[in-house]
Image (cartoon, rainbow, N blue to C red):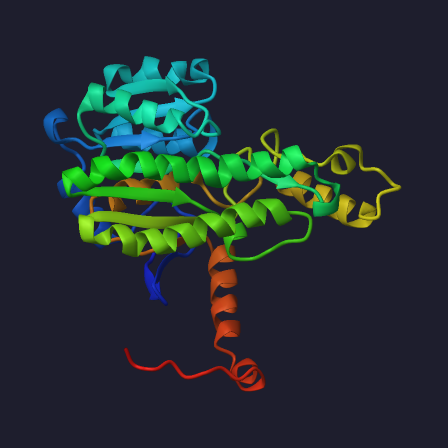
Length: 321
């Protein structure tokens, strides 16, 4: 039996236990009143990385809810099925988030087409596995360019639009990897920790302008992240027995292949929540999806508040300001 998705407020986060397509009744009722609207009042969604996986599913859910979507991908041809199904309510653009200046160009095109941007979903990104020592400089730089700097450029380009509107919603897709480091995934962890930190700061920075910002932190969801989309060090690809990280590489390869396509999370459940959350006046800074991610968050928060740690490592008292 499917367990109803529930909300729990925990240290500034909203966490979504279980993996189910249903959403909390209160959130569902608000969405029913505010998202199924006519074309004149529909939201304009700008989503990066829509060719497949989570980005594609979010785009489909936004379109099914009656909104208009600017769908982007490195290969615009990959968006043809989406455009064929939804017609002029979806505008496909070829867009490589690694090219910083292209973010402003795309935002200008969106404004010419629709006149506003209500929701930005920074979804474009990929995983990179391999020990830090065995990654090339090019791999390291590209991981940060796509997962962090590309996201930052999109936020920077969209912010003036939303600020002028006096409203807007930004979902930055982070990960369970933005909460906990895993051996063999150091650069991916670094990129997602950066996204999480940026989002926490932006939430306060942009709130005075009516812009809501949330960090979406899912656990394992069924996308091709652990399959064809996953980038690897050469030693990981070849499973080089002479590598000093041979045992780690084999362990990590086994985890990825064993979980690919079998993750418990349904992307449709996550997409449904985002589409409905985008209609609310307030968003949590952290939106944590899935039991595994929730457990990691709670364990980390408990460790941060461990009295033994606080007494072992004295800290100064904050003075009143």
